Image (cartoon, rainbow, N blue to C red; front, top):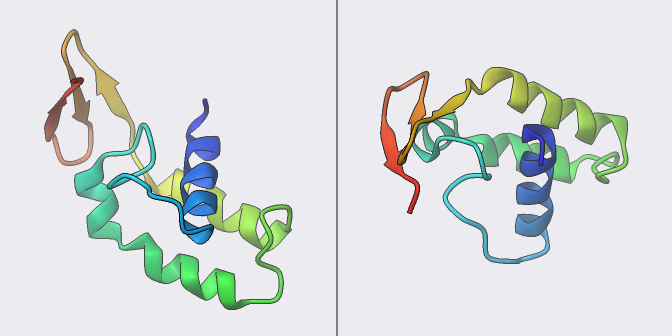
Length: 90
């Protein structure tokens, strides 16, 4: 799954009231929480063009993904290249 699909799935599930994790899959929960994307997401959801198929929604998702740095995978951990925090794979 691409990072864009992961972020889209996260916000779609959240808007449907489904339980979501601390961050989308492949995104550092530490950096994600510091960015506070939820507030931006709710501004988009309140607009008239907030459907996942709309260009406004897709532009928002692309902007989020561009601002997120990569997480590198080592043998037993994921390490965020931005904040250098490591997380166990398990």
